[in-house]
Length: 462
Ligand code: MN
Ligand code: MN
Image (cartoon, rainbow, N blue to C red; front, side, top):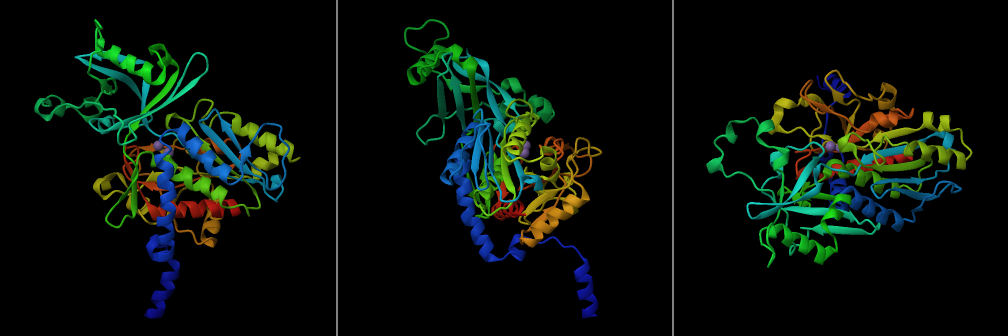
């Protein structure tokens, strides 16, 4: 009986947690690794800030700015800063470039509220800033909570003024008002999609009139403050990128501190481990590239999005500089599209299919396909690619699981995978599971984060 049972054990696939499979030493390493990630989160609430944080980490490891036309040799380490919002970091390997590159692609942008170009107005004795939401948000989640303002104002003469308000304990915070329950009788009858209007997401920024000012004196007070503090006038706000993000800092979640709550885990929880993996694998034989991209949350369009021709230009330039056949470089390269997936949430169990959902603590999640309905819009990695990934992760002792975002027809989503696949590069989605994805405060597991880092290290070395 016992012999028969052991035979069956060998045949059966069973998902296990990092705690069961990897042991306490790995868990302790994961907790230590999470400290660096938490610091990265707090200094990187916008893609511009994340690019600055990433460059600082890369320069500390000897990475230099890259210019098109630079000659290259094995061991060279460069980063290409695309307009301050998108970063390409690479290290030339000892293997010929034609044997393929190992590329990870994660995104740095996160759902938020952007200020409109003519944002400032006065109404009811208060001054407000109009916003236009960026990415997929549930609007009600942003009301009645402390918010911060991050971004840049670029003056007509090209001078850039950086603003960060709401992060220090002594700073004022930004705020969006909500309806009191006493007067919410009519609103309570509406579906969530109708009850909260984008045009009501207005940021409260003042209520004191400027002295000796007639008409819109509260707005005048805000303009006066902006000029005295930052030297900017109202028209300067038209050439600005000012973002409203939650003011909260990243914190441990749970009595056991096994999780991290923060704004923007999607997708910094993949950007940070892929970046640190690149920095920590100087022994990688293949040429490694870590892409940290912008505009994923709005469709990967624009000059800083994954659909920009820049990735192609970089592969062309690397091939030229190293005397490699570019078509061979592409066809032999592999990409980890490093983006988050949804962690199974028992509070909303009906939108998941538990056997194929990402479970918390079970390691990094590999998604063969994404998309919605009949896999519409998916890149769908081949069985051969999945087998290769299995081998690489298993040989490195990485704890991993396969997953699908949610139940069939419950919804769906996509990543940058299809834009990498378009370049004739075998690509697979692999990322950390997130609870409350796209909420102002999301939650991830520390051991899943760390398995992400270990997976990306194994990939660069493979
Ligand atoms: Mn994402
Ligand atoms: Mn997202």
